[in-house]
Image 1 (spheres, rainbow, N blue to C red):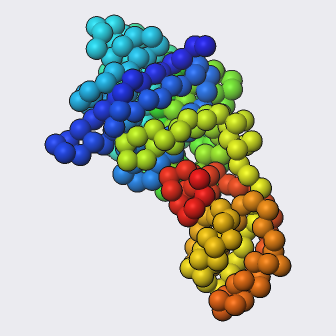
Image 2 (tube, rainbow, N blue to C red):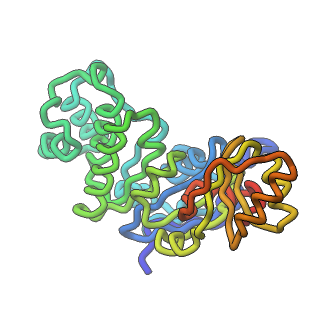
Amino acid sequence: MDYVLQTNNLTKQYRDFKAVDNLQMQIKKGAIYGLVGRNGAGKTTLIRLLCGLQNPTNGTYTLYGRENTSPGIIEVRKRMGAVVESPSIYQELSAEDNIRMQYRVLGMPSFDGVNELLSLVGLESAGKKKAKNFSLGMRQRLGIAIALAGDPDFLILDEPANGLDPQGIIEIRELILKLNRQYQITVLMSSHILDELSKLATHYGFVDSGRMIKEISAEDLEKACRKCMLLTVTDTKILARVLDRLQLQYTILSDEQANVFGEANITELTLALAKEGCKINAVHERDESLESYYVALIGGGRCE
């Protein structure tokens, strides 16, 4: 199996706080790897380590078989492109000039390919326009074009859909799929928009408190996501108490909604809730979502 990236007990510590804690992960060549975790889980710190923007406190990682401590890592890192936190864009320059600037940084021999990059990310008609006049979605796509300037085959994107409107999210999604499927670029992307991530990822890594909780393929995740009932009730605190008594697994979604897993007898549950002064307003059968799976994985409700 060809792996673009593997980490071994990767750790980043700031005094007594471990932002990344003995993390193990591996990304297969050709994957779209979704890095899932809440804010503060360690996603951005991990990405900064992998991009060489920070050094690990302990542990190592290998990129295309080269360990981060070896002299050859600098050359191998040229196969990477990244947009970390927010795109590095010169606001007063046009889209074309931003890409030319990156070509200069990389020591590229000519500016051949600038127009092709703009076309690839859907900015062919905005090449002369100053970046400060771009929408957020256009800036994100320009950031990706800049990251692609060195013709990488591994692309790292930190929250690429963050703050975008629905149309912008669709454009970024289609671009990532195009880069992966047509250009065989392996992608590592972090996101807290789990519904969107589920439309893209072939593999997932679930991170919490700096640790890798679980790695799973999209195929295996689909098998693991159980059938469930979405209940809308008047009080989920009462619902949780009754479900605990009935020994049913569940995930509380809000003050009024919860996913209930397993063979729940809806008549028995309705009567038990009525005795506690809680009413079921709606019942829907559905598959467990990526979000519910993640919440259960890190300890939401009693769902394990």
